[in-house]
Length: 275
Ligand code: 13P
Image 1 (cartoon, rainbow, N blue to C red):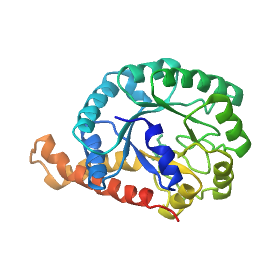
Image 2 (cartoon, protein in one colour):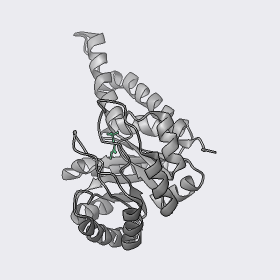
Image 3 (cartoon, rainbow, N blue to C red):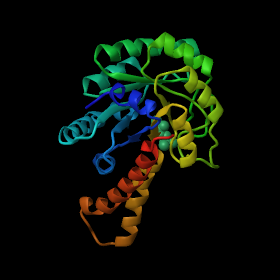
């Protein structure tokens, strides 16, 4: 498996992005992996920090590593929204090749201090690291937009590899279509050379994603749409089959295929070079 540093700088240079998809079980992992193979594309498998509270993150790491060994596509395994130095260390110990430390709700100087410490630890182990400035909220919280001045200072002070910026997205489904602040993204991209990250990719229209990619966004995170597709898919299969019992793997198959199709469609948008 690779780190973000082996795939994202080149992607940014070529004005394309790599999809980072949050998986939480075997079925979502397989669906994403098969889609990336079908598109012959690099892929970032990400895991929510919550799954590091028990064995799940470690088991997903084992499955991802086995899939990557048998495949020719570049694969990065990434801790999403790491909350503490302990969690960063745990992710590194169980085989994650990349981590995020999320100090975006701390005061700016504390975010710099926490991120700097996490960067040291990640780099000692040859692991790539992402951090966030401004704040991309969860569950209806308020968006705090990032500024170019902050981005410049943050990157210089921390030595972080990739930077998540807040340009109008939020995590989860949108009540109304989001409008990205492309001017802001462009100003940040002109002043910061490292690959930029867009969180809250669910529900952002493709045309807006392409504009963000042109500004330097090289990693796009998608979780809600994919995971909800899994749940809705299983519910749909249950309804279709009534009381008839079917083993789990047979139930999941058509659902996995739908998720793969969705992931393929996103990868095609992200990997189109913007000229
Ligand atoms: P969505 O859940 O809105 O797709 O956001 C994903 C994300 O940014 C994970 O960190």
